[in-house]
Image (cartoon, rainbow, N blue to C red; front, side, top):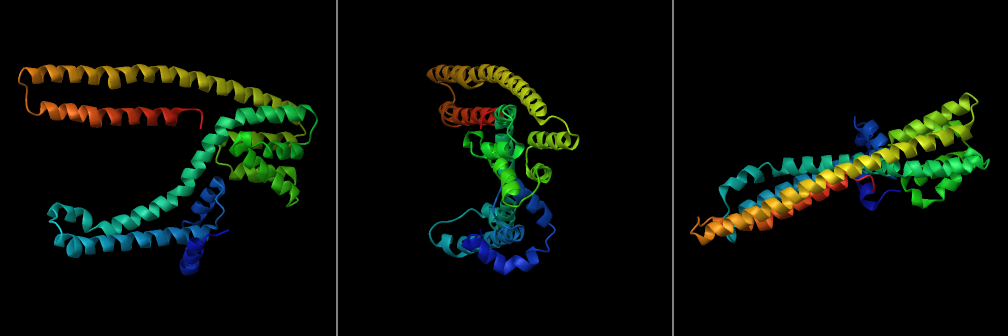
Length: 290
């Protein structure tokens, strides 16, 4: 379902966008990110965003030369930024739009990798009870606690129940669609087990044990890394700034440089916030939890 803006972009650029070399790339990215939009419409929207960015740059140039000078003087150094702004803003708007599906797909990948060990425990428990694979994925699709894994399962069951696709083809489609390499390997292993006439119950149990063991290892590594980061945080963000502030305060008492106060302000209002933000972003990116 297209939004009004996407529909407008598609009506303007749709025919040319369908012939774009970016169609195949954006199609795969959209499938992996579960974005409900046609590839041609999305490329059209990226083109429109780039065009609007260029128009915004032209407006910025007009304001710089005809509006702003009437109220205050502007440094000529800004010309190096203002003059190429149509091209810069157009390229920025276009590339951000084109990168958004891939970014969402990576976010889904992280969520699937985190929730997959627990989802496999659910699958193994259901298979032990003698439930068919189709019903297992149906039950998993009704468990939102498993995040993006339950969405992947919902699509697998949709292919089986609504489109009347056999289980092997449904699993193969899901393996080609998912952004998670781990989930893809699990599905491909299930397909191989079915083809070879193996026992799916044993396969599910073995995979659940393997992924839980790997998950425990990753959690242990994360805790060890977190301990190292905690020690670094105390040294870099607590002890070092405190030492600098004390040293600069003593220097100012004995007639230090006039810039001493400026350095202290920079430490308090620039260095400390930036350091705290940096540690927070690093820990968030490393965290096994989403």
